[in-house]
Structure formats: structure tokens, C-alpha cells
Length: 89
Image: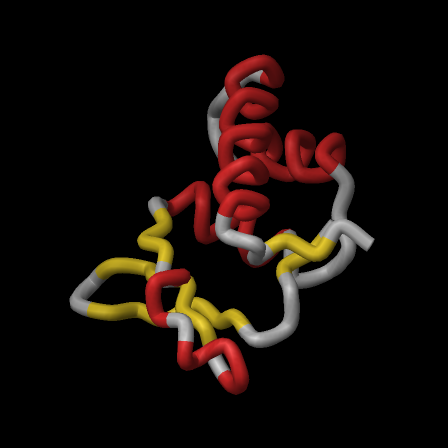
């Protein structure tokens, strides 16, 4: 899975925000404010990544146990799916 084409990260007023770009620009309701770990996972999802790879990346980058990382990754993936930002092909 990976982030669909047409979405980018921007720093707006000190916050990291995922915003639509290009053809997706007409749908501004898809803007998501991300915390630090969300922005990290977003960057990981710029290329094809599995849930297991995201969990490993999160535990490697931050001082979190695997169970917490798994929960965080699953929640993040769920939000991306709900907003149709994730390409699961």
C-alpha cells in the first residue's frame, strides 16, 4: 500500500498537513493534520510499504513497543482509507 498520487505534505503555521494537489485540489475537505509520527508514516508510505514494514519503521524511529506501534499504524491506515488517500493496489 502507498499514498495515492495527488497528495502532498505541507507545513502550515507550524503544523504538518496532508493536502490534495493537482486534480484532487477541488476536494479540500481531504486535508489532514498529522502529528510527528503520522508525518513519518506518511513519508514511509510514499513508496509501497506493508503494515509490518510500517510497524518496524515506527519502532525503529521512536521509542515505542511493537504493540503500540501496531495500534498506531492500524489507526493511521484506517484514517487514510476512510479519506480515500491510500492506494492498496
